[in-house]
Length: 246
Ligand SMILES: C[S@@+](CC[C@H](N)C(=O)[O-])C[C@H]1O[C@@H](n2cnc3c(N)ncnc32)[C@H](O)[C@@H]1O
Image (cartoon, rainbow, N blue to C red; front, top):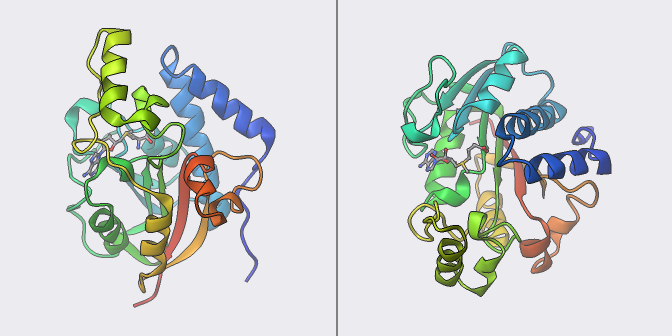
């Protein structure tokens, strides 16, 4: 079988994403629109055009990814548990639902998509199992997350999380005058790359098509093969999984 390659893993792409990310606070629209186009490009690089496919976006926030899947002709649906994340104009037919227990029959989706949610759930293994359950055999599962030891692992209080979560949160409050959105152990969890890889590789219902850095322009798969180093250098792990036939 020919091995699929992620589309355009170029320096130009990574710089464009980085610049957009730096402007996220001032111009969230453009930032998330670019991120959504890039993520759907990645899905299509592994699985072909999404047009006509059923796509489930789990924990999709305000729905940028769902909208991009729809723009490309997919039947895409947003499942988001937190109404405050939806914004003013969520996509039509958005479902308020927890990723642990999706209101979907088994094998309902051709593509199950979850961007930057795994580090926000207390039990990533159960969450992943639910993504697998709703994906049809042969279907694709896209899961990305920012691991704890990534320079961005502490989210809004990064990189001070390297000195401890409590200290980093306190520093954020002092500097900004507002409470941080995330609290370790409540809505942010220390997820690591090594254990996550061991967990997915041990499953008999998925194959790992790719484990790579989501944003790196080069050595994106190589960096993930280096224990220790990968926890810091990967930045954000992208797992492309394929559901096995029963
Ligand atoms: C950092 S945001 C990511 C939003 C979007 N997927 C993105 O990549 O921009 C994390 C999202 O995970 C959602 N989330 C947290 N716990 C969840 C759960 N148990 N099931 C599904 N989504 C969850 C949050 O409500 C939030 O929308």
